[in-house]
Length: 369
Ligand SMILES: Cc1cc2nc3c(=O)[nH]c(=O)nc-3n(C[C@H](O)[C@H](O)[C@H](O)COP(=O)(O)OP(=O)(O)OC[C@H]3O[C@@H](n4cnc5c(N)ncnc54)[C@H](O)[C@@H]3O)c2cc1C
Image 1 (cartoon, helix red, strand yellow):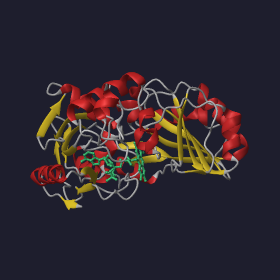
Image 2 (cartoon, helix red, strand yellow):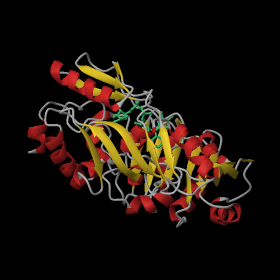
Image 3 (cartoon, protein in one colour):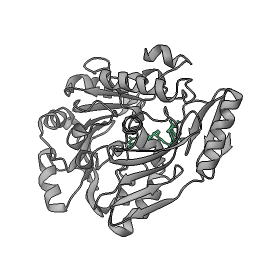
């Protein structure tokens, strides 16, 4: 393991790894690290590169690779701005973004990957490159969803949005409403501002998430999902930073769905702590980066032993994919082919083939062919 404090340290680490014939893995927080890296892997620890620089005029932030989501939210908040972040503030903003980045603002403002404006990256040959929409655009496209497969990012520039407060929380209803509520959720054409999911828990069914707007509009948007009085309700106006307290479901299994198979979901929920159905769509569906399957409207997250086996599309989302062997299924066929071609061009020796690896052997050349 090498602790990096600057882009030059990252570059030196990659060059050292190359000299010694080692693979390179990145570790910022360790949240997404799968297993102890093998002895042929050099881990670059970026956790001390935590700088965040906000440009309030351009509504952007330059983010060091060790900065957490909470670091960026805290830096942006004084300017009335916020990034797209997920359910947990301790997650690294860089790993979150490069793996797609689904969050409470994503239906309105897109995935975090869609909000990436620039990435500085140390590539497999030890070069420090800048990638943007107008500069190495193919590599820039690939980075927005391909995780750590193309190099070590030393800095990201991301788009911020004028968000200070949202209306968020959890409302719990009688568990007997689960079937009806899932059905209503499936049929409801939610506004893009509304990003709530239905969570079937052991003793309740919950509506959980955020409306990116004011209380009056939020209540109007939530009303179709409040089938009766909740027995617990924490929905309220909250500073954006408090969205990290709303919570999520541990993705022991994660799958995408074209429809909401109510009965099958309730069966799975019988032996799970939680089964969460998310609605994607909105700005997520309009994004063009390789992250995710843009036109699949729902997902199911199971915190339990058994996954939902029928009715799933077979696709996944990189950041919620616990099984590295399923990495290819995080992309559409067209995106995967393009990613493999780029992988062959930028990392033919598969130096970064660790964890969610696009290519699992050194034979990047063969697979891309
Ligand atoms: C409690 C919890 C809640 C979560 N909630 C969400 C959520 O709401 N939405 C969502 O989309 N995801 C969510 N995730 C998943 C999370 O975004 C991914 O696991 C992400 O990869 C974590 O990044 P990290 O830097 O924290 O972890 P690390 O283990 O440090 O890094 C994970 C991977 O990110 C990549 N990476 C990190 N830094 C760099 C870099 N500088 N250059 C290149 N690649 C890099 C590498 O592939 C690395 O292996 C959650 C995870 C946890 C643990």
